[in-house]
Image (cartoon, rainbow, N blue to C red):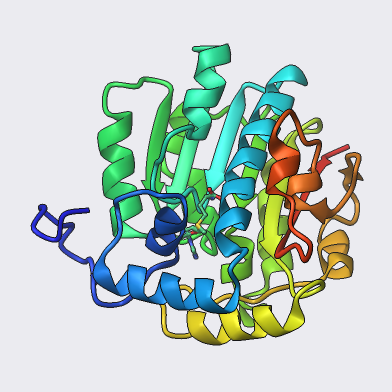
Length: 267
Ligand SMILES: C[S@@+](CC[C@H](N)C(=O)[O-])C[C@H]1O[C@@H](n2cnc3c(N)ncnc32)[C@H](O)[C@@H]1O
């Protein structure tokens, strides 16, 4: 983003944000000097982080297509980030223009961009909210207007739950969302892990303390426990590039994966 562009009023361009660092990894331009500096420090200790981000985005696309193939036409994308090429509404509405997508984020650049990108799209909207306030997310005007919770909804929580600390009870937050969903709904998530590259992830976690979005990497066993009571889809909780890879996705695999992906269905 040009440092002279018109900025949202409550933006702090000097404090790196998870949304903008991730945008930098993906090759976007909606980031500031502070974001790029921290992102480069992250890449110095974990060079695979950029590949992990690209794999994450590709996995998001696969999951949206899988949900559509399973008959789900409603998406709640929580912690959606800054819209880049191939946002879920583009992927979904290309296959079915009537697919409905509600995005949620609490980062001003993500929300401002989202509003611009979605202007004039009757079937998609963005809500500015903190995902920990499940009530606010679920009762927001756009959520109520676009999503019918009597029918299955796919909740997408890609690369966001690791920004919720243990103190903020990620399991309880997930339970609140799940309670609102009809049977046949999906919960899909990706999450940073230290299972394969503990030293690199420790260094990344330390660096992210300097950002607006510190991270808590979590283990495969922890993520499986989060999905307890749901039907975990094959292939289970696996490195992101290994979640039902399609042509070319295998190239994004790394020797020491930095994140897991999983999709589960509400019985
Ligand atoms: C790494 S980005 C992931 C973007 C997108 N989900 C993807 O995977 O392509 C994480 C996003 O989560 C958002 N986020 C972090 N904590 C949040 C919270 N408490 N409530 C809402 N959004 C949050 C950040 O602003 C950022 O946009």
